[in-house]
Image 1: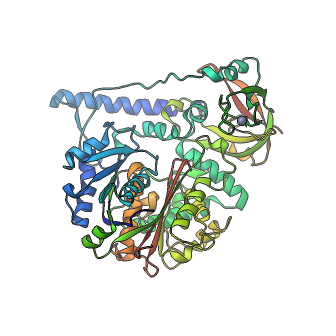
Image 2 (image 1 turned 45 degrees about the vertical axis):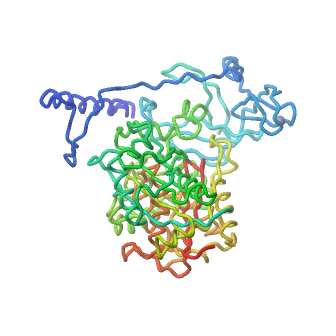
Image 3 (image 1 turned 180 degrees about the horizontal axis):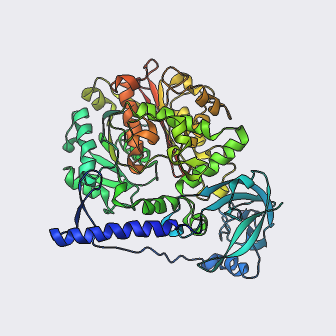
Length: 182
Length: 394
Ligand SMILES: [Zn+2]
């Protein structure tokens, strides 16, 4: 896989070719109008572009992210009713209280299901195909994460997995993944 | 429940890659058809609900784009979003306005113009439709990926195979080939499906509904008016609506969409249908086959088949015309196409035409009981709508 082009390289090349074509059409017609490659229908190519990159509050659950650096996998538990939430949340809708404590989650569980993402979203297209699974931890909460395995045939529903805190590259930030236990 | 409400007009554009038209022109195709079908004018519409998911298309306010182009100003409108079930949500809101007496005639207009963006952008937007922060940000799930999680669990539990999933696509392409408005009008066989590349293992290209441009419109009227407008009003006998957790990890299991079960039970209750034996009431159904596995889950979530039996149904062709209950005679999302915001109106509109016995002969279900069901799922069981139609007033 890695000697071949990534999905991102292929997409970027195709888009560059298309936009070069748009520029040449614009030069000859005076407007960014190009024919659909299959039907010849006239298409206007947007001359405006936006980038979406959101800035999201994690203020009330910041401890979860701070704990990753200490190799701890924690979540919130309602002091009133004992409900454990994952992903962590700062309010308990069951008893309407906001008195939560941080608890460490069990690091072992069972794989419930999994898939390989072969066709990737653009913002993930620089990665090789990755496997995503959902596991049920011994505390009863489920966690979605990548699985450290490339071949889905080596996985089985019901197999044991553990949670590892890992650094996601090339972005270089801490996250967690599921690791099959033989 | 308020006043009785009937469908008096339906319209649908040709689905497909529609680079020949812009969003307003595309929407007009179905609005015009529905107005003509109902025999009403824009001035007769009291309110219209617009369904559109958007993101991949340029116009952020589709409702007002449509209102101006279709001559609907100054009628009130708003856009609703329930992901792939937006269209059924629009029909429900239009229905509720008529039932409550706030409108005598209301219209649900669905449109999606997906081809305004390149495929990787569309994959990105749909992948984000779930829980963006916890499930997309770090793990890059895609829409096929979410349903593939259900496929893996279902196949493991009940012994279904990739070939079994393929049979769903074979059926839906068979009927899509007989629907002039469908995106794919070619029959397809198991070998071809099995030979297609993986999109999200174990789902392959031909397990997936396509990227589609399309519009569909449904016009609803109150009882007295409906009877004046048409000899064949199609009554809304019941609507059920439910939601599921945004994080897939919070689901109890991965072999059933809990929201679909809840929506079906609500709709059955309103329409006075025995939830233990629903198929004996229906001549035909449209179910949400965004992926082949989704149609299999639908048979069981609706109580058509028992848990684990849907795969036998598929093997035995029980959902072709002549089987236990014909399903997706429009070609389904798989072959008819899946313009996200218009899919609900298209399902409900096609079923109204089925009950009126107005669809193409080769895909017309025999109408004996006079009832039909639409099962429309938004996201991956994030939203669920079940709409029951009837030739008799329930
Ligand atoms: Zn609590």
